[in-house]
Structure formats: structure tokens, C-alpha cells
Length: 161
Image (tube, helix red, strand yellow):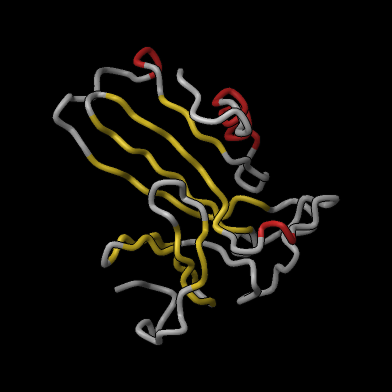
């Protein structure tokens, strides 16, 4: 498989993390799926993007599914190939307590927010959570670009519709 960047983990490490359990920390990654890793064949004319998100960082004393830092995965399919990427949804990722591998804030509505809805809307990619403002994400890199909310156009955070 072709790696996009050298500073991300391998897909073998991602698979190992997957089987360790749902309350384990994950890591950021980005890679192309090799044809032999896909059961069957992706149709050449199939083109689109699937986004999946949820918590990705739990260790360091967190015990609730809603406490982990948000993590977004993207599966982009085009020309019979699939590109996979995963990133933390977190405007303040540098403030993570690295010693405990835990978020620097874990209370509901804290600065480090989870992502439980991903919405492509009006040319933007937003990660939503039950108790905080939406996070703006770059749709290509999945990097968090800021917190939406100052314009007041979204009155509820839990469900986008």
C-alpha cells in the first residue's frame, strides 16, 4: 500500500488497535488500501466519500464513551481505489496530557470536544457533539480548522437535523 505521509502509523498498527477494544486510544493514520486487501473489487465508476466519527482517546482515567476526544475517519473511493484517513477532531490537541495519554479536559462541553455527527454542509465539513459548538474541519486533510458558533446560525449541537 502507498503511504501518504511518513509521520503516521501503519495500517497494521491500526488493525492491532482495532482488536484491542472500543475504549483504547487510537492513532492518526492515512494510507491507500491495496487491491489484495479488498474482498471483491471496487467498481471503477463508484466515486464518493464516507465519513465515520466517534471518540478516539480514552486512556488516563476516562471511563465513559462520551468523554474521549473526537476522531474522524474518511474513506474516499475513486477509480477503483480507496484512500483511508483518520484524525483527531480537536482544536487544542497540543494541550493533551501526553503522560497520561488523556484529554486535557474531559468534562461535558469542555474545550476538547467529541465528534458524534459529521456533516458536509454548505461547502464545509463540520463535526458536531451534544454539548459544544461544531468544529470546522478541512475536508481534505481532516485537520481541525476552528470552532464554529460565533455566527449563531446553529442553535442546537446534538443533532444536525
